[in-house]
Length: 626
Image (cartoon, rainbow, N blue to C red; front, side):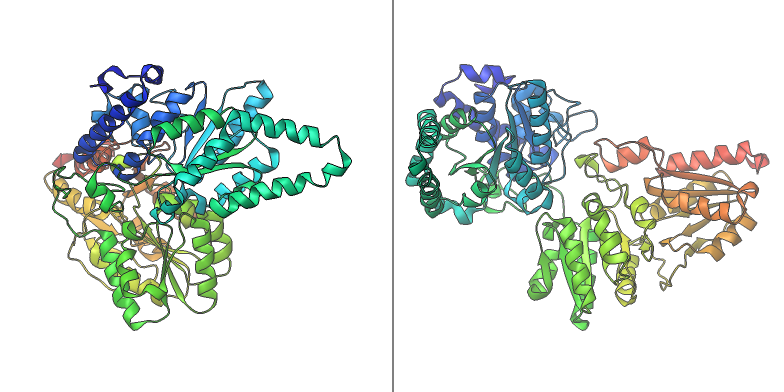
């Protein structure tokens, strides 16, 4: 096997084209083998194998800088940059991340998990190199989805205006433009990317400037070149922004990729190479169903079928309830930012295609669009993952809450999301949502409560957020009507109180049973509302209990426990009680299975129970029982 001999990019340069093609197939096989067992971003990474090989073959990495947008397409890059042997521990605690991570390798520049960022980063690096007199190259690799994000357009505009030394590679895997990849397009790009063409073009432009009569003709010559290219390739937009545009070319043709990269990488100014690739390339099931294999679960390689039995998720519970509500309420519309399947809204789209909006990777615009719909009397439900919703923080404040519009934010993947790691854990939304005026924030304990909260939110004429986890849906069989700002008492105990929110209520039930063995009687509360708080119940609890625990699957800074702390401080009750806040610390949480991480941070039932026991013993309460 050729792959056995390749550990770093410098070893690629010893291979010929035939060997590089064999290597690409071996890398694909390794990616399929590992992802089938570990899960991960399969389709995008399979589509980017040749590009990763060509980049490392043509460039002098890591001296030359490659920045990957998002990182869904970087598995081949990881394999080629010293992590081949560790690739079998993909997305494991102590293994390697599914995204670029400079803590793993000097070949990774950023920890990247959000889209539309790479060109901004690349321009900053390129300008820093210019200031330092560093002539190494800077390359940003983006997907076509990233072009829907405003940050990407801002960066393109800035790069073109400043003529920054950045090469942008646009990896386009939308097959609708595949016919543009043909012999004529390839031939034209071979010509216009060749060094001799660009040298002659540059010298000709200098020559023409000396003649006043021809000065009037020169712009027309350039316009002619643009017109001819515009008839054949979709590059005029980028040219008008100040980029030299090349493409589209076949992103799986190694000879063409290598020759084009060699030709244009040494050109000056901002350049954009447009390549066409196929998601899931080399694995039929991923090619046929790229969306299902975007973030794949464990699967059988021979059949492409998942190895885990499908169980209903909170996302599906949300979507089904929303469909039921929408049947009777024509005001309901649903919005998402490039995640219809992940949020369950693909089900809504099938039922109400005219009332569904997927705006692409543009979270800020999604919230702004929802604001306009709400202003005209509709009831927008915005379903976005917690980690991505934070990108639209200003729009939540300015476009929705300040206007006091009835937009409902369905915050999917709230809490720990396991193997996707620090860029995707939804641990900040409690903090950034609860401080916004006019906003009502809820978190359901189980699937029935999610349904009830969604129905409640649709009827409420206020901005509302509902956070729920990436998890199989379950029922705790304690259903009660939702009332604004009212919590739910789940167990009347006498010794210590736990106020749990959202996913931690289930853990609270487990703690309830465990502490019984210590002779401890637990008063268990399902908070339901992060904002507004159930102030009446909180005062009652403070009068009854000396020790109060809060539990949340979120960052403790500005979290749910902090809200309780602030309330008790305002009421002058802190000196009378001991409030212990349990949650996630002030750090970025690593890759790991959810259960693994909960245990690590003391948020599993066993460790919480032990904490309660030790606290009670230390406070000399119930010591005779312990």
